[in-house]
Amino acid sequence: MVRRDPRALRALRNSFPMEVATSDVGDLLARDCDGVIVASPHTLHREHAEAALRAGAHVLLEKPMTVRPDDARAVARTAESEGRVVSLAYGWNYSSIGAWAAEVAASGALGDLRSINGHMASALVHMFSGEGGYGVVTLDGYDFEASPDTWARPESGGGYLYGQVSHQLGLALLLVRSEPELVYAQMNLLPSGVDIDVAVTVRFADGVLGTFTGHGRLPWGTRYPFGFQLAGENGVMTLDFERERADANLVDGTNADAAGGRDAFDGTSRDLWLDVESGDGIYSCEGPAQFLVDLCNGRDPVDRAPVDVGVRAVVIMDAAVRSAQSGSPVELQAA
Image (cartoon, rainbow, N blue to C red; front, top):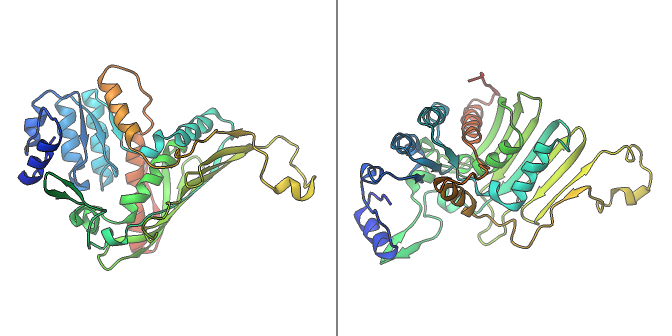
């Protein structure tokens, strides 16, 4: 454990059994760690991830991977050269719904993908305005709260795009495996200068069109919407984490006309589906952490948030910021 603030460090040390608790990253890495979780402010992700990789550790990196594409690509190159793994802390990807969706998309059941539409919402106006955190956790008399320096500063990757749409892109880019070619975005900003309403359109190299929208204006205590619709040449897939639904309808030649009248459109038939249990749609980050534990223990876990997903997400978000500022689409060059 590394914490800069000595009071916070003391509170954590007194609250949890830890072999290492220090204010210096070098002290931690000198302990020959098998794996390191990097959850520092966004702008420090590259520095800390590369240091951990060069020390021989696998890295679980909080989202967003970085703020700038060059930094994300540099981390990926360092992981490759050091023979270590960088995975992203995209909890949705490890949910039963996310894992099922990835398997269906990879199976080819939907045919060649043609579009993906995603939406989400959160209760974040207070935090992104810099007026407070996301609730206080008190340990040993010390109050831990999210810092405005990370979440309410546009130059630090604050705002809804990097803070939340990054979640959406994390799962979407596990399902759509090609590179983004063009990005167009519009955003509404808070007085703090960070975005709170986001609409992003992406054209991918394989012809897939993506739309990703979200806002941080949800009333506190409301179940957050999060979901996707994917359309392929052979069918469509619906993922709804709010209502806990995951299913697909496939083209089989019998739905070429409107035979059956209204009954043909009542939505009761499904060709593929996941038997979702109550609570499966609630966000958890246990999956990424378990992946790192399994990896460090020599097992062969499935990486559901590989480094290329993180890189492509940063490329899209950086282009979205530039597009929103200019009012024009941003064309991307192949890396």
